[in-house]
Image 1 (cartoon, helix red, strand yellow):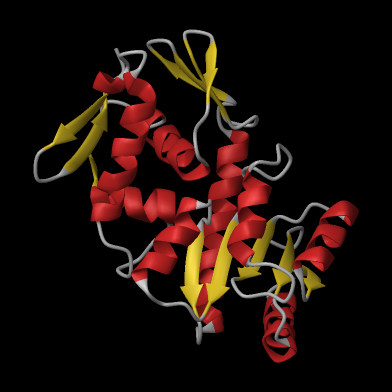
Image 2 (cartoon, rainbow, N blue to C red):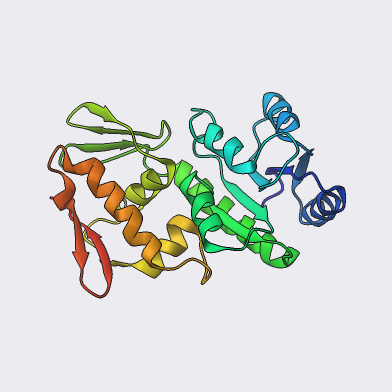
Length: 231
C-alpha cells in the first residue's frame, strides 16, 4: 500500500540512520538520507519526499529551526514530519509541535511503533490531500493546499499547528470533539502530551478569529472538549 512513498531521514548518527533505512526499505518505502540540514535541503531540491524523519540535534543547525523554515515554505508547509530525538521533556515536545511537527518520537524507540506512526500519518495525509481543497464557515475560509486562512476576504497569519487544529474542527462541524480526540488527530500524540496542550492552542486559534468576531464559532464544552459551530 505504501510502496510509492519516499521518506527522507535527517539524522547525523550513522547507525540510527542505517537502522531506519533498513527497516523502512523492508517495509516497502523508498529512502533518502541526510546527515545534516544542508544535505536535507539538497535532497529536497532533488525530490519532495512523502514524509520526513527529523532529528533535533544536527551538526549545522537544529531540527526545529529547519522545520520552522519548512512550514513557511509553500511547497513544504503541509509535508508530514516526525521528530526523532532524545529530548523527552514535555517542553521540548511542545516546542516541536509548536513549530509544526506532526508527531514526536523519543529515542530509544521501537521500529515497529515508528512504522505504525508513519503509516497513520501517510494515510491521513493522503486522505487530507484528496479531501476538499477549501472549507468555509461564516466568512472563514481555509485553503488546505495553500495552507491559507482568510476571513471576509482578508488573509490572516496562522501557525502550522493552529492551522491543522482549525482545519480539523472545521471539517468536523457541530460535533463535540474531546481533547483526547484532538490530540490524537491533530498532534497524533499519545499519553506523553498533556491535554492542556489543546487548551493552549485553542486559545491561540480564538485570538486569531477574535479580531473579526468569529471566535464564537469555537464553543467550549465543559468537562469534555470543543465544538466548531457551523451556522
